[in-house]
Length: 394
Ligand code: PHB
Image (cartoon, rainbow, N blue to C red):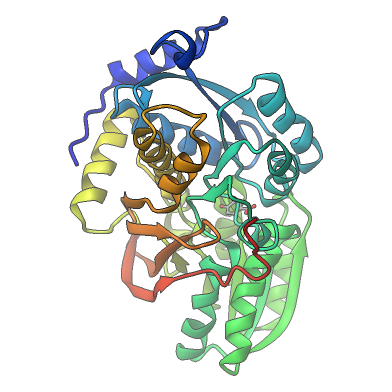
């Protein structure tokens, strides 16, 4: 795959995205109508950095096809979901019904994804989830028009259950923000940890999106567990890992999904030393695709790519693939969905295909921070598919 992305292309794409006005559809009057894509992502709050990286990755994929999907120009409409589940149905309606977008790319927060799903299951808007792990999205709430380019919460954390036992960690405390995303990640870990003989000594839940961890860290110190499994992300993860070290808990191994360090490792500095995580991506993956992707992202946006950038980029790749198969004709819905379903995405994480429930079947890597670098220790679970409990595609 050749990648041509430059600041100029990205700026052109941005300019095209802001042009408004009525344009008749291509199939009425020729190849002129823009494809509308709504980005429902957090651009404020603790997950703001995640929303930005996903948007950047998505725009970078589009820039590689000259800013087009199936030969048609693209208009991007970005909406700040504020990681607020209560506003998710209304925000989704604004995009699906108000702006009549052809595609939605969202969300980051599992609660927002659940609210979004209520709407897109009715409107039929083709939706790609570029982060939120809510198991239900590719479980009981699966739908032909809903795809995910990230992970299920279960999938990202299940492998760590066995890793912990294999490393002799018998008594573990868990800590997470209290909402579907975090609870289900802890659930995936606990399932495999207890199955392999581990004991959970305490499950601590912290209101979202608080970043005041002191009381909980005192509680952990008193419990003296063999290890701690934690889910936080974005600026919350940055602070939690620093606070954990500052509280003198450095001798108690800290584990979690890779969100604990991804995108925030530089800011965590020495506090992140030794943190052990599982994830479907790692910055250091030594493949041609990953190296090219990271170099292009850095030159386009002036920052290092992270897992969120990859998920946004792959959301773009899925749409590019689907729209190419139907030559940009979004009315050819079944052919469009069929092409997306059978896509083999050449991701910076490694190639992946979709399960029947439209969730990636992917390798989950074991990573550890050593000398300030995220080192890939190996594959914790190869080609892991989410069990997709309760998914019935209609
Ligand atoms: C989620 O809410 O599903 C979620 C949020 C942030 C992450 C991962 C998962 O980094």
